[in-house]
Length: 250
Image 1 (cartoon, rainbow, N blue to C red):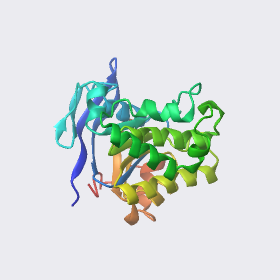
Image 2: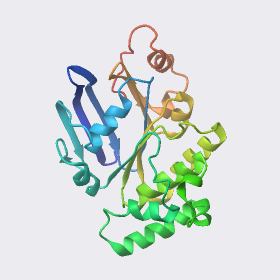
Image 3: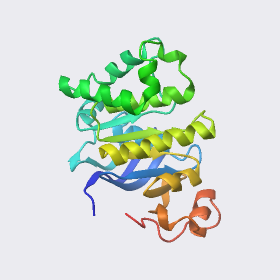
Image 4: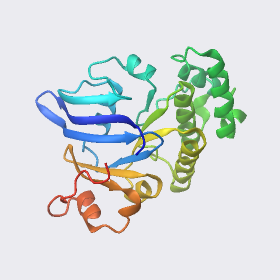
C-alpha cells in the first residue's frame, strides 16, 4: 500500500458549542485522488480548513507525512507541502495572471524550483501562458479555476486540497478541470483531496471516496468498487440507516 500522506483521526471541530465535524477519520495515500462528497452544511469545508490550520480541532489528530499539525499555523503546514484551494478560488483579480502565480510561490524558498514550476504551469495550462500579462479578473470561471490550481502548484505542494472545483462552472468546463487534475496526478505524482457534490463525477475521477453527512463520515470505499452500490447511494441521499461498511477501502 502507498505511503499515507494525510491521516485524520477522530477529529472534532466546533463552532462554539455546535460540532461542525464529529469524530472524523480519513486517509489520503501518496499519489491518490480522494473525493469527499455530501450535501451542503455537512462539514466538508470545515474539515479542509482544520487540516490546513485555519481552524483548530477541538479533539483528534491530523498528521501530514507522519508529522502532527494540530494547532500549527497555516504557514507551517504549507511548508510541509500542503496547499488549500478554497471554495470560490480566491484569486487576486486586480493582479495579472503571472503576478498571481508568483504570489503562490512566496513560501517556496527554492528560486530555481519556482522558475521550473512557472514553466510547468504554463505548459499544463496554455491559456494562462497566453494571458500571463492580463488581469486575472478578466479570466473566465474555468480559467480562474485553472489559475487557482496553478498557483497551488507554484508553492511546491505535493498534496493539494480543493474545495468544490466545479462550483459555478459549466459541466463541460468542469470535466476539463478534472481531466487536468488527473493528468497532474499521472505526470507529476500529485496527491489530491477534493470536495465535490457531484457523486457521479467523484466516482469517475477518484481512487477512493468518503461520504460526509450531518458532520460525520457515514460511508467510504474504493470508487471502482462502488459504481453500482445501493449502500453508497443510500448513504449519499440519506435514505434509511447508514451502511455498515463505514471505513471500507481505507
